[in-house]
Length: 224
Ligand SMILES: O=C(CO)COP(=O)(O)O
Image 1 (cartoon, rainbow, N blue to C red):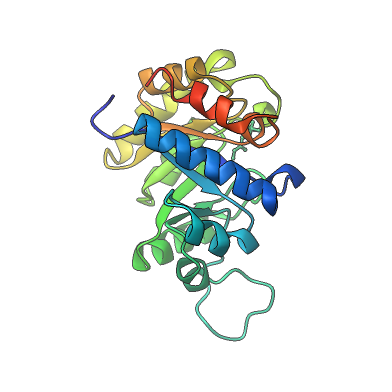
Image 2 (tube, rainbow, N blue to C red):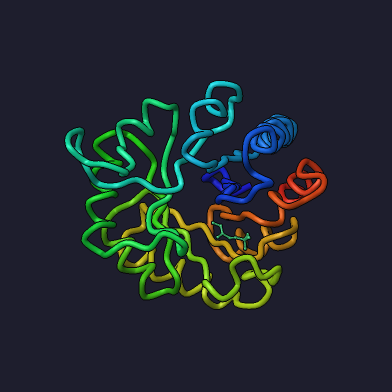
């Protein structure tokens, strides 16, 4: 293993297979495999599942989004303090399916830092990875949008974007860790990503839609 312990972050999105009892099943599988392997496996469930999951399992829980607001008169927003109080360790910011402006991303990273929430800023290519790194988040997670949910792994289809993003982030801010995602489905995909200099992966469908999420998670960590 690398000096920084790898992170496997499973985004449950709003998949039916990641709601309610299914979210618990995936969280339990993640906890089992994390304990067996020593690899950190986090989960980003729907907002409504953050509290139940974080209070039942020892794995780190992430929000899928926050709004950079302070408590007050906002309706239909996600208050970062509430996400923290519900037990989240961190949050995704600017996921490809929840894009923000650069100014919003900056504000979200700052509020996350203030609240001691880990920030994972998602990006779509190496230029945006460099821009995100300049904001000083904990992680930049590069995911080529065309491969998200495609079943085709970024590690195999586009290793260059991983390598370029790692280099871009390092040159802007070497303290920012890099994750990658889109189509990640096996231990081999994870190993390629880590060998290219990332600290792990962000993934969804291969775990969330699996008949046996525990078996997929065991495979994902098998080459670390
Ligand atoms: O968007 C993703 C994770 O946030 C990637 O999704 P898939 O793993 O389904 O390609």
